[in-house]
Image (cartoon, rainbow over all chains, first blue to last red; front, side, top):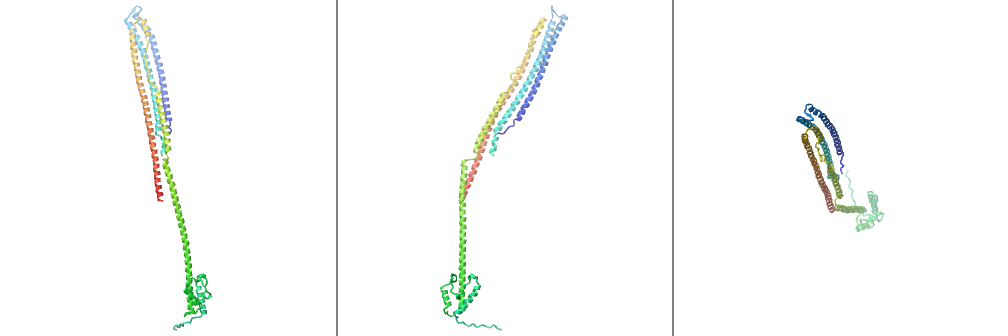
Length: 145
Length: 307
């Protein structure tokens, strides 16, 4: 049988693996940093609001809009706005982080899909070459003169 | 002075002594002209006894000889008788020479004839041997060609070789595409099973804060629910995207598998076709061999018939 040189296929396979490894490592590291940053950001945000909360209440109290026997619509609205803003900001940060992580997930899956498609195509090419070479019966041609 | 003319006087017939003298003289004179083996004695020296000397003699010659040797001849001189005797000896000698030459020629012709006959017989035998050899050799040659025709083409063993190579090639094709199918099936869809999670931010802390300040929490609760619904939608969108990408990926894999199946069929058919072509080519080669052998056979048969 005609000998087939498989080294180009193996070289290509190594190239795909190395490229995939480098890209996934880069993506994983970026994800890690993003998660770190996002989590830190959320934490900072929550702490900030937690620190602001007493000041907001005291501000209303100073203006006489809040107190034990004061039921002020302004205070109600003001505090609800504060709570809503806090929730919105924190939730927004969390949503941003989640979306960013989803982006990294997508990128990672794209890299995996590209890598596996490349391997599949390479494998198909290799096996097709083997098969087509066998089908030509080249090894018998010397007998035909 | 005028030449004197001699007058011829008829001589009387001489005596035996005269004859003898004349005979001896003429014989001696004549013998000088001859080689030694052909010299003959004169009559006067005695009656010749050798066969050669008697050759060519007839009865008249004997009579004349007897007449010359002692009888009283009628009217001839001794010289004339001697001349006649000399002429007879010449004649005898010529007869002897003729007979010798004749014998020699006969002998020579006989030898020549025998030699030529021998040559002819030898050549004839040689032709016969050569013809026999050629006919025999041609017969063996024809038999050898016929046996080769009966044995069939010499490339019969190649059919077995072709079958084995084709079987091995089919095994290679089958194993190649089996390996490819296994490789394609082992590929995991990276987009499959992905579930993006909606953000769930608890409001307990804030509700507690608001409640502690005597502020209602309904607004916050509604707002939070709205935010979470939006997050759900965003997560669903992400999931939809992943599902779509998963479908694309799966479709690609199915396409590859279908392509592998088509390749398996195509290569199997190509192998069968190549095997048939090789068999046809072998058959053509074999037929060519048989045709050539038949041509040689016919040629040899024609040559044998012409021998």
